[in-house]
Every structure is written in structure tokens, then in C-alpha cells.
Length: 423
Image (cartoon, rainbow, N blue to C red; front, side, top):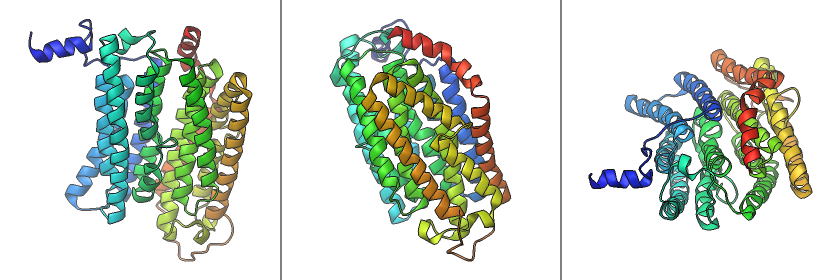
């Protein structure tokens, strides 16, 4: 047996190959979310993305690569394979963020690369510790084992960077400011959800960690959600507000999953879908408003509802889903997390409620500035009807997901009950 075969056998403890993909309902759920957001972003890009031939080809190649790497993280059953897909996603994010190649775009791409690469280096050290302690990186063979705090923390640092959570969120606002609108939709709907997926697969579905670890994650999630929500309240641009809103909502997802209770975990999983659809749609809407008005500065907008009533209604639905208003999908997701938080710890529950209030306030501010009142920029350009239809589609999915929420709940609840029972 060659050295390479020996090493691969060691990584999988000889009973399963390291190149292993498998999954159940939860994996299919994540994969469908990524595929849907990727498809909508692809259709939007076909109309909006312009550039030299080779540059455009590169753009679409990395768009597809980001979706594929996200699905790879979802279905991979070996931590080494997950790490490989993780790094491919980082590379794709870097290239997509700096698409326009201005100095600001290159700087934003560099921030995204260095923060994520540095954090993933620490993650790799954590994986190495698990390998030498447990003699395997196979998720199937790690199931039910308890690892020490050090590798858990190192891996979580990588997750924090990818999912843009305090204190490693610094790259995300820069990336959203520089990237094309469909790339922003991909970042919010896919790239940042990759960290949520790994956290769920590793720390909820597979291994056991010291109790203090999950409590710390939940506390950090609350703080991150509150801080980012507060910054969003004072943001000057559409993209800035949506960027910090994304960071705040990611905190809700981490909170729900870290609580490891039925309502929290189910709410966290529903939140991934609700946020991916609604926030991706909001970024696409913001891109249309920016292009039509010629600015992203909220004080220079207004009157969008008169220019495109259909876009205004669709954006309102998406914003209300992020806020958590019934009967939209975001309501049921946020409700599950809030119930789980209150069941677990009163302080967590109060913090989550305050963060939810921040969400309501900054979404009202976004919609009022962009769509209500009189236009501060009188010469709006026409808005492409097909692209408005894509935003409407995202709004309809948010509405349908809430009205028929029993569908995803029934689809996920058996696996969620099994996981909760294991704790």
C-alpha cells in the first residue's frame, strides 16, 4: 500500500474512504436552498453582469463554483473533504467580490481572503488535533464522541469568519459594498450559510463538546446580533444596512442551533431558508434601486414605490419576512428561536427580543428611505421587468414558506427530534 493510501486509510480509520458524500433530509434541505438562491442569482447576472469576455466567463464559473462548494460542505462526510470545499468557497468569494477590479474592490476582496484564510488556518489546526486524538476525520466515526475545548474553539473561529459573526465580521461590509448585487445575494444566501451548515453538522449532529462551549456560542450570537443590529440602525447606505442586518440575523441562527433544543434547532434550520431567500431578494432589490437612482445613499433616495410599485410590494414582503411578521416564513423561524431562547435562559430570550426589535426598526428605516416620500434623485432610470420578477419570486417563496410552513417542519422534525433526544 502506498504512502497516500496509508494516509487516506488513517484519515478514515480504514473503514470508509475519505472521499465520502452522503446525507439525509437536512442535507437535501440545505442543498435545495443553495441551488435555488444560486439559480436566481445566475438569472439576475445574465441580464446585469457586463464586462470583457474572459472576465464574464470567469464570473459565471466562480458563481457556479460557490454553489458547488456549498453543496460539497453539505454532503461531505469527512472533515478533510469539508475543509477542501470550504477553501474552494473562500477562493470563489474572493474572485467574485473583486469582480469590477477597482482599488476598492481589490481591497474588499483582499479583506475577505485574508480574514477567511487566516481563520481557516486555525480551523485546520483544530482538525489536526481531532485527527491525532481520535485517529479519524470521518463524521460517521466521530458521532457521539466528545472532543476537548481547544479543537472546538479553533474550528469555531473558522466558522465565525465564514459566517461573519462578531468579532470576525469585518470583511463582510466591505465585500457587500464592492460586489455586484447578485454576488451579495450569493454571499447572504449561500456563503455565510456554509458556516452555519458546518456548525450544525459538526457540533449538533456529530460530536459532543463541553457544555460551556455551546453556552459561549449562544452568548456570542446574542452580542453579535445586538451590536450589528445597532450599527444597521445608523447605516447610511442600502448595502451597509443590509450587510449589518445579515450579521445580526446570522446571530439568530447560531443562537437557535447552540441551544440544542427542539424549538431552537428547528427555528434555526427554518431561519437558514427564511433568511437566504428574503435577504438575497433584498440585495437584488437594492441593486435595482441603486442602478435606477444612481446612488446607494439612503438620504438621496425615496419615491421608489411610485417608480416601481411591484418592486416596492415585493421588497416590503421580503423585509417583513426578515422582521418576522406572520404569515411569512421568517415569523415561524424567529418564533422558534425566541421560544428556544426563553426556554433555555431568560437573559438569552430578552437579548433575542431586543435584537428582533432592532430588526423591525432598521427595516422600517430602509423601506421608508428607499420607497416612500418624494424622490431625492428625480431622474430614475427604467427598471428591468424581468429582474423585478425575480425579486417577486423571492417574495412569493417567503410567503408560501410561511403559509405552508408545516411542509418544511414535517420534513425536518424527525431528524431534529432524534438530535435533541441524543443530547
